[in-house]
Amino acid sequence: MKKCLTLALGLLGPAVAFAQTAPVAPPPAAPADTSYWRTSLKAGVNLNEAVVSDNWKGGGATSLGLSTLFNGQAHYLRGPHTWDNEADLLYAGQYTRGQGYRKTNDRLWLDTKYGQHLTKKWDAFVSLNMLSQLSRGYDYSGDTPRLVSSFLAPAYLTNAYGVEFRPNTRFTLRLSPFAPRLTVVRDLARFQSLPTDQVYGVNPGHTTRWEILAAQLLATLDQPLGPNANLKARYLLFSNYGMFRLREINQRLDVTITAKVYGLLSVNFQSTVLYQFDQDANIQFSQGLGLGLLLTRQRPVAGAK
Image (tube, rainbow, N blue to C red; front, side):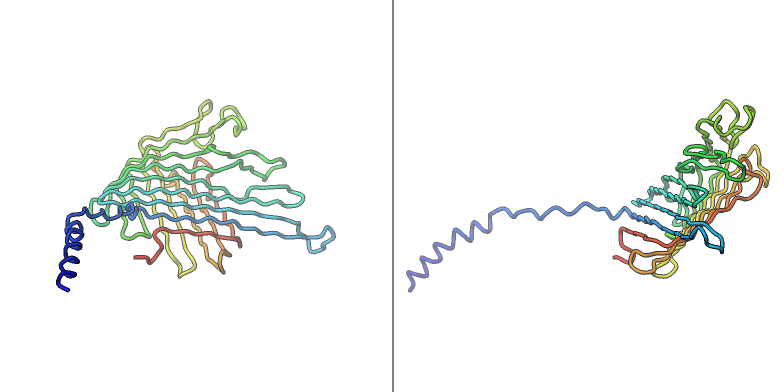
């Protein structure tokens, strides 16, 4: 028995020694840290239609309408540095028997901003944004349609510098005492009735207009309305210091409300109120209400640890 025990210890001894001296495999590499990013995506399509027979004595016309919306956001936060990006697109049109196809809504908004914390709620920032439309727009008030807008006609590119107030993740207010803006009207002659006409503030023979000494205010609200609804609003004010009069201060308010009914089925409402003196002396207004499909994605998921 003693001989067997001695033999076993002799055989186990080198194995124990090897186990004590063998190198330990390193732990697997940790996944890349993406917690600095917060992203969201909202995309929807809505359809409305009406069918009326030719002998329908109640009046009306057969029509088919389609509207689409897209909003993508990517927000980066690491230490005192922030980088916020947003693409907000809206397009709607309707075909009506006897009138053909007409655009009913159109918006293209692109925005990028770099900020650095000054305090817990205040940042210094620099931003660049563009506001335009995606396709041609016509005025149908006359006997024949008249072209009044198209892609990059007009387009407003604003480079803003200032401070931003952000009390929470839902509301931001940018104050920009220096916000140079470039107005672009591609192929200006298409919109002129006379060769001397100024179009969207751009002089004849030019395609751009610079407003260097200008100020901008931009307020945004992204507010949940319960578990299945959301309100998104953006208010934009722009003023040229050389024309600092109340009637020449440009203002625009965009409001979008989306509410999920069941699964991907949703209801959405969009409205824009615009006052821009070099477009029209009166307030402009548009709105749309639709039922359709809405896809939403958010990372990290709301409420996740």
